[in-house]
Length: 280
Image (cartoon, rainbow, N blue to C red; front, side, top):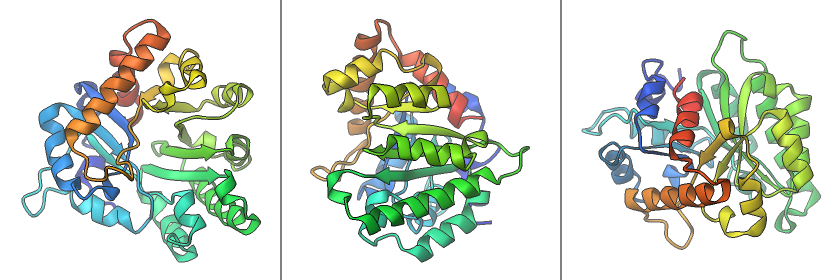
Protein backbone atom coordinates (compact mmCIF):
# COMPACT_ATOMS: atom_id res chain seq x y z
CA UNK A 1 0.00 0.00 0.00
CA UNK A 2 1.04 3.58 -0.64
CA UNK A 3 1.69 4.41 2.99
CA UNK A 4 2.95 1.08 4.36
CA UNK A 5 6.49 2.31 5.15
CA UNK A 6 5.38 5.37 7.11
CA UNK A 7 6.55 4.58 10.61
CA UNK A 8 4.96 7.73 12.03
CA UNK A 9 1.50 6.58 10.90
CA UNK A 10 1.76 2.99 12.03
CA UNK A 11 -0.96 1.57 14.27
CA UNK A 12 1.81 0.81 16.78
CA UNK A 13 2.07 4.52 17.55
CA UNK A 14 -0.27 5.29 20.42
CA UNK A 15 -1.77 8.40 21.96
CA UNK A 16 0.76 8.46 24.78
CA UNK A 17 3.50 9.33 22.28
CA UNK A 18 1.72 12.62 21.64
CA UNK A 19 0.55 13.17 25.22
CA UNK A 20 4.15 13.02 26.46
CA UNK A 21 5.20 15.93 24.22
CA UNK A 22 5.59 19.51 25.40
CA UNK A 23 4.16 21.01 22.21
CA UNK A 24 2.38 19.89 19.03
CA UNK A 25 2.10 21.90 15.81
CA UNK A 26 -1.13 20.85 14.10
CA UNK A 27 -0.38 22.56 10.78
CA UNK A 28 3.10 22.88 9.30
CA UNK A 29 4.55 22.25 5.83
CA UNK A 30 7.60 20.01 6.04
CA UNK A 31 7.51 19.51 2.27
CA UNK A 32 8.15 23.24 1.71
CA UNK A 33 11.23 23.38 3.95
CA UNK A 34 14.73 23.00 2.52
CA UNK A 35 15.64 22.12 6.10
CA UNK A 36 12.98 19.38 6.40
CA UNK A 37 15.36 16.57 7.31
CA UNK A 38 17.01 18.53 10.09
CA UNK A 39 13.64 19.69 11.46
CA UNK A 40 12.34 16.12 11.53
CA UNK A 41 15.51 14.79 13.16
CA UNK A 42 15.46 17.53 15.80
CA UNK A 43 11.81 17.18 16.82
CA UNK A 44 12.22 14.34 19.31
CA UNK A 45 15.09 15.98 21.19
CA UNK A 46 12.91 19.08 21.65
CA UNK A 47 9.92 16.96 22.79
CA UNK A 48 8.01 18.44 19.88
CA UNK A 49 5.57 16.86 17.45
CA UNK A 50 3.71 18.07 14.40
CA UNK A 51 1.27 17.33 11.60
CA UNK A 52 3.00 18.03 8.29
CA UNK A 53 0.39 19.06 5.74
CA UNK A 54 1.20 18.49 2.09
CA UNK A 55 0.35 20.92 -0.68
CA UNK A 56 0.51 18.38 -3.51
CA UNK A 57 -0.22 14.64 -3.58
CA UNK A 58 3.13 14.05 -5.27
CA UNK A 59 4.99 15.33 -2.19
CA UNK A 60 3.52 12.71 0.11
CA UNK A 61 5.75 9.79 -0.80
CA UNK A 62 9.00 11.76 -0.60
CA UNK A 63 8.15 13.33 2.75
CA UNK A 64 7.06 9.97 4.12
CA UNK A 65 10.22 8.17 3.01
CA UNK A 66 12.29 10.72 4.89
CA UNK A 67 10.69 9.43 8.11
CA UNK A 68 10.90 5.67 7.55
CA UNK A 69 14.14 5.12 9.41
CA UNK A 70 15.98 4.24 6.21
CA UNK A 71 19.23 5.81 5.05
CA UNK A 72 20.22 6.63 8.64
CA UNK A 73 17.09 8.74 9.16
CA UNK A 74 15.53 8.24 12.60
CA UNK A 75 11.89 7.32 12.95
CA UNK A 76 9.62 10.09 14.18
CA UNK A 77 6.93 8.92 16.61
CA UNK A 78 5.59 12.44 17.21
CA UNK A 79 5.24 13.34 13.54
CA UNK A 80 2.21 12.76 11.33
CA UNK A 81 2.32 13.17 7.54
CA UNK A 82 -0.71 14.22 5.51
CA UNK A 83 -1.45 13.88 1.82
CA UNK A 84 -2.80 17.16 0.50
CA UNK A 85 -4.01 19.18 -2.46
CA UNK A 86 -3.79 22.85 -1.52
CA UNK A 87 -6.38 25.07 -3.27
CA UNK A 88 -3.65 27.49 -4.38
CA UNK A 89 -1.82 24.67 -6.13
CA UNK A 90 -5.06 23.50 -7.72
CA UNK A 91 -5.81 27.05 -8.86
CA UNK A 92 -2.52 27.54 -10.69
CA UNK A 93 -2.28 24.02 -12.09
CA UNK A 94 0.58 22.71 -9.95
CA UNK A 95 -1.88 20.08 -8.74
CA UNK A 96 -3.41 18.51 -11.83
CA UNK A 97 -6.52 16.44 -12.38
CA UNK A 98 -4.27 13.37 -12.57
CA UNK A 99 -2.75 14.28 -9.20
CA UNK A 100 -6.22 14.41 -7.66
CA UNK A 101 -7.06 11.01 -9.15
CA UNK A 102 -3.88 9.59 -7.66
CA UNK A 103 -4.78 11.10 -4.31
CA UNK A 104 -8.25 9.55 -4.43
CA UNK A 105 -6.69 6.15 -5.10
CA UNK A 106 -4.46 6.64 -2.06
CA UNK A 107 -6.85 8.05 0.56
CA UNK A 108 -8.18 4.69 1.73
CA UNK A 109 -4.71 3.80 2.99
CA UNK A 110 -3.81 7.17 4.56
CA UNK A 111 -5.14 8.37 7.90
CA UNK A 112 -4.08 12.02 7.72
CA UNK A 113 -5.24 14.34 4.93
CA UNK A 114 -4.22 17.94 4.47
CA UNK A 115 -3.94 20.56 3.40
CA UNK A 116 -7.17 20.54 1.41
CA UNK A 117 -10.06 22.98 1.06
CA UNK A 118 -11.24 26.08 -0.76
CA UNK A 119 -9.98 29.63 -1.24
CA UNK A 120 -12.54 32.07 -2.64
CA UNK A 121 -10.57 35.24 -1.90
CA UNK A 122 -10.30 37.92 -4.58
CA UNK A 123 -7.12 36.46 -6.08
CA UNK A 124 -9.14 33.36 -7.00
CA UNK A 125 -12.31 35.02 -8.29
CA UNK A 126 -12.22 33.26 -11.66
CA UNK A 127 -15.24 30.97 -11.97
CA UNK A 128 -13.27 28.15 -13.60
CA UNK A 129 -10.62 28.23 -10.87
CA UNK A 130 -13.26 27.99 -8.15
CA UNK A 131 -14.94 25.17 -10.04
CA UNK A 132 -11.68 23.19 -10.09
CA UNK A 133 -11.19 23.75 -6.37
CA UNK A 134 -14.73 22.65 -5.59
CA UNK A 135 -14.48 19.55 -7.75
CA UNK A 136 -11.28 18.43 -6.05
CA UNK A 137 -12.55 19.13 -2.53
CA UNK A 138 -15.89 17.40 -3.14
CA UNK A 139 -14.14 14.38 -4.64
CA UNK A 140 -11.85 14.06 -1.62
CA UNK A 141 -14.73 14.43 0.85
CA UNK A 142 -16.85 11.86 -1.00
CA UNK A 143 -13.97 9.41 -0.83
CA UNK A 144 -13.49 10.05 2.88
CA UNK A 145 -17.20 9.45 3.48
CA UNK A 146 -16.90 5.98 1.93
CA UNK A 147 -14.35 4.54 4.35
CA UNK A 148 -15.61 1.56 6.37
CA UNK A 149 -17.29 2.36 9.67
CA UNK A 150 -14.83 0.19 11.62
CA UNK A 151 -11.80 2.12 10.30
CA UNK A 152 -10.28 4.92 12.36
CA UNK A 153 -11.69 8.31 11.34
CA UNK A 154 -9.67 10.35 8.88
CA UNK A 155 -8.11 13.59 10.11
CA UNK A 156 -8.54 16.52 7.70
CA UNK A 157 -6.75 19.88 7.88
CA UNK A 158 -8.84 22.32 5.89
CA UNK A 159 -8.11 25.69 4.29
CA UNK A 160 -11.30 27.80 4.25
CA UNK A 161 -10.58 31.37 3.14
CA UNK A 162 -13.71 33.36 2.21
CA UNK A 163 -15.31 29.95 1.79
CA UNK A 164 -16.38 28.65 5.21
CA UNK A 165 -20.01 28.10 4.24
CA UNK A 166 -18.99 26.36 1.02
CA UNK A 167 -16.57 24.12 2.93
CA UNK A 168 -19.19 23.20 5.53
CA UNK A 169 -21.78 22.62 2.80
CA UNK A 170 -19.48 20.10 1.12
CA UNK A 171 -18.59 18.37 4.39
CA UNK A 172 -22.28 18.03 5.26
CA UNK A 173 -23.57 17.13 1.78
CA UNK A 174 -20.96 14.39 1.29
CA UNK A 175 -21.44 13.14 4.88
CA UNK A 176 -17.66 13.31 5.31
CA UNK A 177 -18.19 14.59 8.85
CA UNK A 178 -19.54 11.15 9.76
CA UNK A 179 -16.16 9.57 8.97
CA UNK A 180 -13.62 12.28 9.70
CA UNK A 181 -12.44 14.86 12.18
CA UNK A 182 -12.28 18.19 10.35
CA UNK A 183 -9.77 20.80 11.52
CA UNK A 184 -10.37 24.33 10.24
CA UNK A 185 -6.89 25.77 9.96
CA UNK A 186 -6.46 29.49 10.74
CA UNK A 187 -10.21 30.18 10.93
CA UNK A 188 -11.05 33.64 9.55
CA UNK A 189 -14.77 33.48 8.82
CA UNK A 190 -17.66 35.37 10.40
CA UNK A 191 -19.02 34.80 13.90
CA UNK A 192 -22.09 33.09 12.41
CA UNK A 193 -19.83 30.79 10.41
CA UNK A 194 -17.82 30.03 13.54
CA UNK A 195 -21.01 29.08 15.35
CA UNK A 196 -22.01 26.83 12.45
CA UNK A 197 -18.57 25.18 12.39
CA UNK A 198 -18.68 24.54 16.13
CA UNK A 199 -22.14 22.96 15.86
CA UNK A 200 -20.85 20.80 12.99
CA UNK A 201 -18.17 19.40 15.29
CA UNK A 202 -15.15 21.01 13.66
CA UNK A 203 -11.81 21.41 15.38
CA UNK A 204 -9.68 24.57 15.20
CA UNK A 205 -5.92 25.00 14.84
CA UNK A 206 -4.79 28.45 15.93
CA UNK A 207 -1.50 30.24 15.32
CA UNK A 208 0.11 33.42 16.52
CA UNK A 209 -0.79 35.35 13.35
CA UNK A 210 -4.52 34.88 13.84
CA UNK A 211 -4.15 36.02 17.45
CA UNK A 212 -2.72 39.35 16.31
CA UNK A 213 -6.18 40.48 15.17
CA UNK A 214 -9.01 41.57 17.43
CA UNK A 215 -11.37 39.10 15.77
CA UNK A 216 -8.86 36.30 16.20
CA UNK A 217 -8.49 37.01 19.90
CA UNK A 218 -12.27 37.11 20.37
CA UNK A 219 -12.67 33.81 18.55
CA UNK A 220 -9.92 32.33 20.72
CA UNK A 221 -12.20 32.79 23.72
CA UNK A 222 -15.00 30.64 22.31
CA UNK A 223 -13.33 27.73 20.51
CA UNK A 224 -14.42 24.51 22.27
CA UNK A 225 -11.81 23.57 24.86
CA UNK A 226 -11.72 19.95 23.70
CA UNK A 227 -11.30 20.86 20.00
CA UNK A 228 -8.53 23.44 20.23
CA UNK A 229 -5.07 22.95 18.68
CA UNK A 230 -2.00 25.11 18.03
CA UNK A 231 -0.24 25.65 14.70
CA UNK A 232 2.51 27.67 13.00
CA UNK A 233 1.70 27.22 9.27
CA UNK A 234 5.46 27.51 8.67
CA UNK A 235 7.54 27.99 6.63
CA UNK A 236 6.75 31.49 5.46
CA UNK A 237 7.64 32.63 1.95
CA UNK A 238 10.05 35.15 3.50
CA UNK A 239 11.81 32.55 5.64
CA UNK A 240 11.56 29.08 4.05
CA UNK A 241 14.65 27.64 5.78
CA UNK A 242 13.10 27.50 9.23
CA UNK A 243 14.40 25.41 12.11
CA UNK A 244 12.85 23.37 14.89
CA UNK A 245 13.54 26.37 17.12
CA UNK A 246 11.36 28.52 14.84
CA UNK A 247 8.50 26.03 15.13
CA UNK A 248 8.91 25.79 18.88
CA UNK A 249 8.96 29.58 19.30
CA UNK A 250 5.87 29.96 17.13
CA UNK A 251 3.91 27.37 19.11
CA UNK A 252 5.03 28.89 22.41
CA UNK A 253 3.73 32.28 21.25
CA UNK A 254 0.46 30.71 20.10
CA UNK A 255 0.03 29.04 23.49
CA UNK A 256 0.72 32.32 25.28
CA UNK A 257 -1.76 34.19 23.10
CA UNK A 258 -4.46 31.57 23.60
CA UNK A 259 -3.79 31.48 27.34
CA UNK A 260 -4.16 35.25 27.57
CA UNK A 261 -7.38 35.22 25.56
CA UNK A 262 -8.95 32.35 27.50
CA UNK A 263 -7.70 33.29 30.96
CA UNK A 264 -5.87 30.07 31.77
CA UNK A 265 -2.81 28.10 30.63
CA UNK A 266 -3.84 26.08 27.57
CA UNK A 267 -0.63 24.09 27.05
CA UNK A 268 -1.77 20.84 28.70
CA UNK A 269 -5.20 21.15 27.13
CA UNK A 270 -3.95 21.45 23.55
CA UNK A 271 -1.51 18.56 24.02
CA UNK A 272 -4.35 16.40 25.35
CA UNK A 273 -6.42 17.38 22.31
CA UNK A 274 -3.54 16.59 19.95
CA UNK A 275 -3.13 13.18 21.57
CA UNK A 276 -6.85 12.52 21.18
CA UNK A 277 -6.83 13.45 17.51
CA UNK A 278 -3.41 12.36 16.26
CA UNK A 279 -2.50 9.62 18.70
CA UNK A 280 -5.51 7.36 18.45
